Image (cartoon, rainbow, N blue to C red):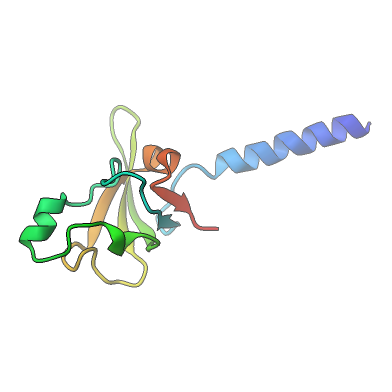
Length: 116
């Protein structure tokens, strides 16, 4: 009887964890530091565009930022994209209010994590 109870409990927990993978408007995420020089699944401007605008050519200013999902878009290939804005209301790099990201790929690669 104990084995059946623990098996059902385990499957219930797995179901709850997998049910939280769909993004909703208002969910909070944290942008993590990247190992490489660029973000592949979050559409930040290229470094040369930042230099042209007089900013420092790195992405350190977005590391650890808490962002809110403003819109959820699903395309014909079932890719889920989210539009992100900063929780504190400031702009990314001083000129972007919103950025777009591929939700599944950015979570899987570690570019973003769901805030607990």
